[in-house]
Every structure is written in C-alpha cells, then in structure tokens.
Image 1 (cartoon, rainbow, N blue to C red):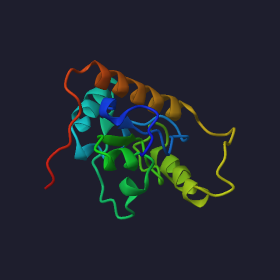
Image 2: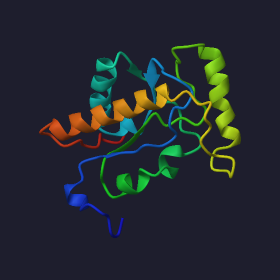
Image 3: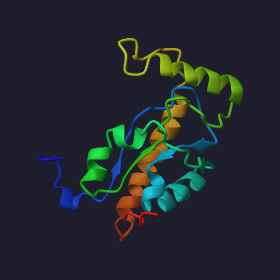
Length: 154
C-alpha cells in the first residue's frame, strides 16, 4: 500500500472479488470480513434486495481474512470485505444443494495450483449472481453519505 493507484484517503471501502462462485446460484453469500465494519449492514440490504441472506460468519481457523487480497486495505485502515469468499463452497445452493456443495469442495484440490483454471463445464450463473451482489454493494456504498466504518473490537 506504499503506492496505491487511488489515494487511500479517498478510498472508502475495498470490496474484493475472490473465490468466485462457479457452481451455481445460491440463497446465501459469504461476507468474509463483513462483521468487522458497517459494510455488514449494507451487505444485508443488498442480499435482501436480491432475495438472499448473508451467511453467518464462521470461525476463520485458516486466517483467510488475513491472507486474502483485501487485507492490505484493511491493514491501511480501509474497511474491506470479500463477498462470496469460500474455498469449500458451503453455500445454500438453489439446485441440488448437497451435490453442489460436494462439487464446490473439489475446488480445494486445485486452488492456487497449476490446474486452477477455467472449466467450460462451470455454471456461471452463480458467478453472475455474485458479481451482481458486488456491483450493487459498491453502488450502495458510493451512494451512502456516511463512509463505512470499522466496528469496535470485542
């Protein structure tokens, strides 16, 4: 963050696109880091508008929040989230939930390896849904007069 492309003083939030949903549409979406700032409330608004809910945060035993691409922003004081971040795809998928979760878990075998590449068999409707959520969240953040803020540490 020594030389950001956009001045950090003018950056109100970082909404990170990582671990995209290639399995299919879901009733919920992960919101990694959302519980740390007021972005959580805005994420809930967008999820509700889309007929979805935010997944409850799970214990981050692998330290994913601190290893993700959004963390340099968080470290620099910018509230940061990764909507949809899930390595194991534990979502509530609309179609064939159990089979879809099993399919999503196969990603763990290729994540960040040479075999981690596009597969034409992917169901990109989930990715479109996730991208729509992220775009709407960005729009809400931009249109809200108050900047997102960190929540007090517990």
